[in-house]
Image 1 (cartoon, rainbow over the protein chains, first blue to last red):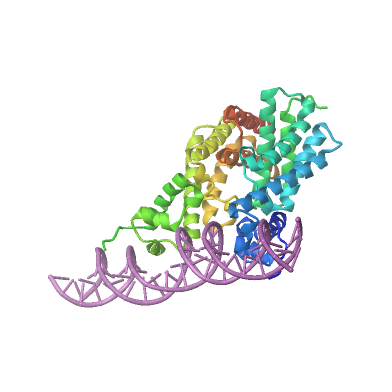
Image 2: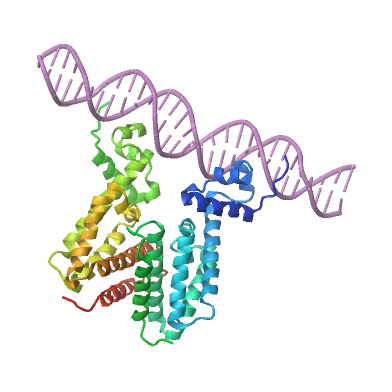
Amino acid sequence: MPRVGLTPDRVVDTAMTLVDERGLDGLTLAAVADRCGVAAPSLYKHVSNLADLRTLVGVRVLREMADQFATAVMGRSGADAVATLMRAYRGYVVAHPARYAAVPADPLHQPEYAEAGRRLLEVMGAVLRPWQLTGNDLVHAMRAARVITHGFASLESAGGFGLPQDLDETYERLIHMFLTSLTPQES
Amino acid sequence: MPRVGLTPDRVVDTAMTLVDERGLDGLTLAAVADRCGVAAPSLYKHVSNLADLRTLVGVRVLREMADQFATAVMGRSGADAVATLMRAYRGYVVAHPARYAAVPADPLHQPEYAEAGRRLLEVMGAVLRPWQLTGNDLVHAMRAARVITHGFASLESAGGFGLPQDLDETYERLIHMFLTSLTPQES
DNA sequence: GCTTTAAAGCTATGAGAGATAGCCAAGCGC
DNA sequence: GCGCTTGGCTATCTCTCATAGCTTTAAAGC
């Protein structure tokens, strides 16, 4: 039988499209194997198991998010940068709702995710720098931003809001709420 | 074989304790049947299937939440009532992290959950009444409250915050942030 | 108090998931 | 051209949920 030339990266690629198409629960080894034109056990030559594949997908998503957010805030600062970052967060989740569900809530606690998670955190930290928050205030501010972005994004991606109408407005109000909660020492 | 006297409610009862002990993924028909002292297929006499059981658990949880929140805010009003409700929300999730994961993000869109979901929404609406918000402002305010409570609770229950220390402080700041975002027409 | 009958158990069985063992061939390095 | 690593495969196991169909319990009705 001719080799199809699979690699871990290619497996993750098809896993990503499968997640997009069928949701996170649709990510099964049988489906991935089928999509790759290969029998299911062959996948184990490239990926340890399903949990491993899911982790690889999650890490890929987290990196994708960090990259997009970093470029989005580039050249911006102050309230503009914060708002842009928060909009970019929501934008990613709207564009890839199923992918977002693949990243765990506690990336920093899992070694595989830690690096990507830290990068994402650094973007938030950089954007908040103009406020010169002290250690404790900074922690609370970053947590607040995370609660708002994750809370809104997870609800929106799960269809948690009754009507899609005015969702932009709701999010803008949340951004404003967060910005005014920072000490009004805007850049 | 003597009958063990199962009912749908008793099945859901043991399902709830299983969710508490093993998490939402630990809820399997085999485990429930074992716990009930019955063979797995016997459960189908009381519950349509696993999805149905999961729904029943979710509805039970949502009702539990609505009940607890309603009694928590009883006799309170204004900012005190809002803060109490938000603290009760977090309190439930801290007490039963796995149960919280059983309720879907869009309860109002699923007929089985609709009634319990509406009750929970009514509590929030009642608590916001002193602010006399207009239709649009009310919608945005309730969404903001939901984003904050759900965002924080889901992150906390998933171990999403690095250190548990100061989490109370973070949440109190978020409550304050929300309250000050309402027009300062406090009761 | 006996008969009927709906309901609540059971065993047997199947489909489909993940996972492992072990075989075989492709194709690269020497 | 030879050998060995590597990436495929089939066969098989276990554990899910799920269904079919049988048996027995126990309550309702005469």
